[in-house]
Amino acid sequence: MDLARRNLEAALQLLQSLVQEGLRLVVLCPGSRSGPLAVAAGLLDGPQLTLHTALDERSAAFFALGWSRARGCAAAVITTSGTAVANLLPAAVEADFGAIPLLLITADRPRRLKGCGANQTVNQQDFLASSVRALLEGDPDGVALMAPQALARLATRAIAASTAAPAGPVHVNLAIEEPLHAGTTTLMALQAPAAQLSPGQPAPLPAPRPAASAAAGAGPSDPIGLGGLDPDAPGLVVAGPWRGRPQHWPSFCAALRHWQQRTGWPVLADGLSGLRGEPGLALVAAADLCLDPEAAALLAPQVLRLGPVPASRRLQDLLRRCGGRQLLISEADPRPLDPLGTACHQWSGGLARWWQQLPPAAQRGSPSAASQALGARWQRREAQVQAQLAPLLAAPAWGEPAIAHQLSLLLPPGLPLVIANSSPVRDWDSFTPASAAARPIHAFRGASGIDGTLSLACGVAEACGDAVLLSGDLALLHDSNGWLWHRRLRGRLTVVLLDNGGGGIFEQLAIRPEDGALLDFERLFAMPQGVDPLLLAAAHGVPGRPCRRAEELPAALAWARSQPMALLQLCTDRRRDAAWRHDLRRMASALAPPA
Image (tube, rainbow, N blue to C red; front, side):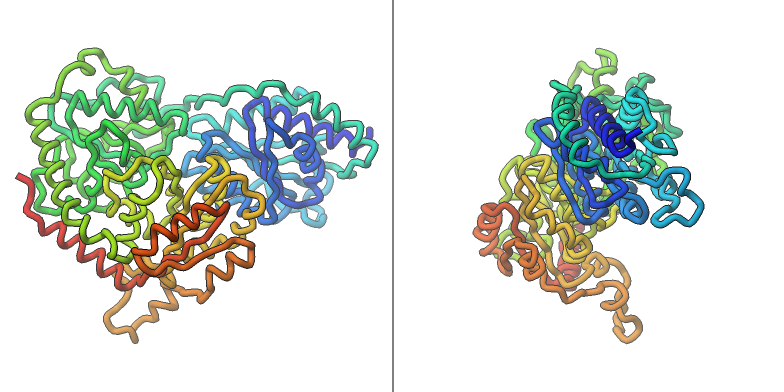
């Protein structure tokens, strides 16, 4: 057997089968053991399969993750053996908890080199085991020994496991025997067949596959009816972060409009729900600021909860205080999603299917007088809070709450936005109005880390063609290798940096003592790094500009949006902004409670 040729043929057959199953993007990292996979990906690069290369495996995995989130189907990352595989773990964790499909294809040593001290031979098959939906392995003696049918089955299983409910990462670990690198004759012989074997029409993207019922409630194959809710009685809809596939967004919004028209229930929309600005919905955007212990008139005896729990602790407290009947509906994620323990039922079939399976009698009718009264109280409270916030957060106000508010009004409608974790997520939730334009919101709250923030945004920009990233300085610096995507990115990305010189989120927690001598807060928590982000971006060929006043923001944003990739540095004061947030919440709570 010509092992070098057979390795390449097997790699080609596997990737071609993945393309037939819906694979559209491959991110390749450098390595020798993965050589046959690299050459095969290069031969298949074209209209049906896009190939990107990346130096850093961690960045590569997050780029693929961002693309997968925005497209709703799995991208693949190819790495060599050894510690390269370990660098995939942070993205695998986020893909797991965020229910995002992702393929992690790793080259490995054959069985004869395992457990004998061979160089770069590690237990890499165990590195991702706690986070992946499946570990799929080829022949332990090498992929060259696998028949085409076995490789096709491997591809089918990989895509099926990644897209089954809940979607998530899959690790495909492939032993490859030496020799690894085919010569010129083999490359010439396989180049034409590679083009011929590429399928003429890619298969349609696979639909989510049902999973077994979760401990919290029934699975999607089991109709749940109203789940204990009474559409003729007052209630609330609490919409958490959106984790469904983009292909299902229109039907989700349509079902929510139908339910609100039927019940009159107000929709309390988390900033990451993606619902703010959606037409035809009566939304409450300032729920985080509307609530206080005296607002008993805003409680309801029943709640329809959509997706994961919201980030707002006040909104979480509302769910505890409401008690009563609470139905939690997720989008193809049957895992328990109720850390509050207040949901009576959880159903993972998605809101659109839930609405469709309701009996006609439950779908027909108009809101009751009591439901309309509760909705009116929420809308009055929302109007009160927004009327107070608007003049305080509009230009010339400057600070992170004001920047979130102003950006929501300045960014073009429909422009995808990626929001980094920590303070940016919370400010977007609290201080952006429901009247701002609708747009896709991408935030990676599965594990709520700051790993790979810039690379994630690059992947979203690649998938959507255009995107904006709103990030803090530590999150951006943590993924400085993400700037390397600048010369490879086919989409446009505008990076809006909230530079407050350290971890601003810790200023909002009860950590810093009044006597600074008791604890070195700056060193232990804020950790300012003293790096000039504009110089760092410029070193990678990315232009940037500082912006220090609200009056400069529209022009600075327009300049940044005109570049293929640009950094806009907005300098803020984290201590002052922490105090300002406290004052804004206190003022909102002091408003007269709704009658």
